[in-house]
Length: 86
Image (cartoon, rainbow, N blue to C red; front, side, top):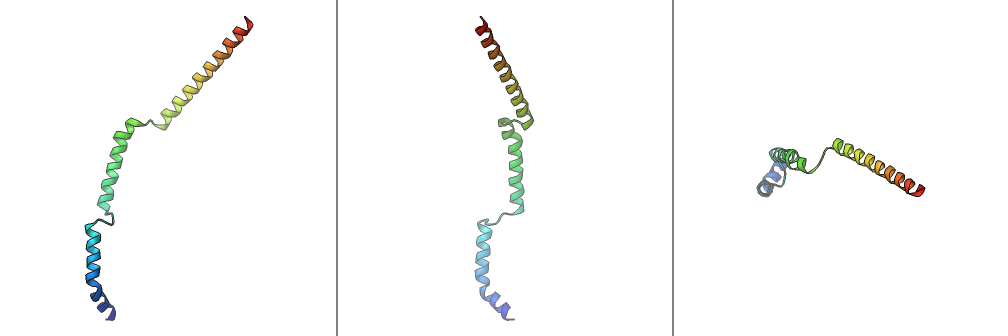
């Protein structure tokens, strides 16, 4: 019974704290999390998709660049050999 009296004594303070937390959205509700999750998914599907490439496409591009650089290097070496001989 004594605990109940303490709860009743502090109930106005508890009510004020709970109202403050509720009004100022101190804690995130599941609906807010779901909404933000949908916003992030939509952003990834639209905006980011236009700005970045997939890792597979990047690696393929990188391999092509390296092979072209190797061809250029071989061509420079052949040109240097040709000029040295003549």
